[in-house]
Length: 344
Ligand code: NAD
Ligand code: UDP
Picture 1 (cartoon, rainbow, N blue to C red):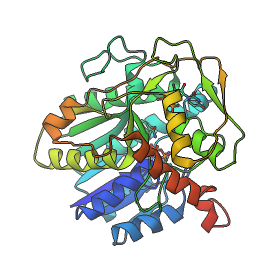
Picture 2 (tube, protein in one colour):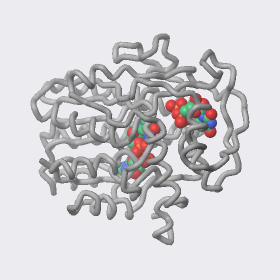
Picture 3 (spheres, rainbow, N blue to C red):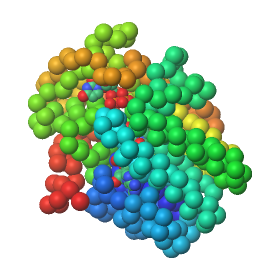
């Protein structure tokens, strides 16, 4: 079976590529390297023990994507490609709408032209906005608080509409909660790109000494210690869910939506404390005001993924998950740059 991964050189895509290859699939990656680099592809090949057909292309480009489908018999597509920084999306909304929506629409068009009718999409818990009920199941209403979130919300709607018009097409929307951690080898992980937005890469950058201190956004939420609660899921467990989703679609099942989280929440302070224990570093943290748009608590109900896909996340222990992130970051403080002159 041949699976195309758009954005497959990125953080979640690279881990999924390795797991797919280890499950016996052939992989094609299409990535413009706007947030990744060629070294990732080499490492995917090393860990997956097979060569990867790699296209350095912008998925928004019709001719370039057409070539990928003409040259490969693709059975299913996993669409990771997209920009993902919430703050940047607020500052540059058009860049986000253009990149993330054009990529989605172009991909759907080219897939249909080539009769490829199985697609898995990287969506996000961000589509639940500020939820009224936790744990959050897939029936909760959706709404967003920033342009990045809206690109996920709109991509989902575009996909539902295209499925309604073309009954041959089946699409699985995977709504990730907070992916952290890295491959057990420590060879691939999340690329530290400038000043991180997300908690985990920020913590590890403070731990390796690249950043001085961490800001804790808000201490007056209605949570056990006043800081926000999130559901952190190991990236390799997330990768496994993609394999199960591919299998689900290949067996002829209908379009569906699945939340992917551990179903357990940790506060920001708990994450920092655990990271201090794992790294042995002081990790200076200073309390700051709330970050706009942050819901107090986001915890997934992933019962549906467990029941229908047979998904069983294996890493529920926060210490273990953070240790895997630390193995990667402490050995690659500059990301993949440590082995290449430029980060490309
Ligand atoms: P990432 O930035 O590491 O990976 C995305 C990849 O897509 C990068 O390699 C980038 O170079 C590529 N890309 C971006 N635009 C492209 C384009 N137009 N054409 C070709 N390639 C393009 O991000 P990630 O953390 O691996 O996230 C993967 C997907 O999952 C994204 O769609 C993201 O929005 C979604 N997601 C991520 C998180 C998270 O916390 N990491 C949470 C929920 C959803
Ligand atoms: N957070 C923080 N300091 C940071 C980055 C994040 O206190 O430098 C908090 C943030 O307010 C949220 C939690 O950590 O409550 C997780 O944030 P992240 O951006 O990783 O994920 P998101 O909340 O967007 O799902």
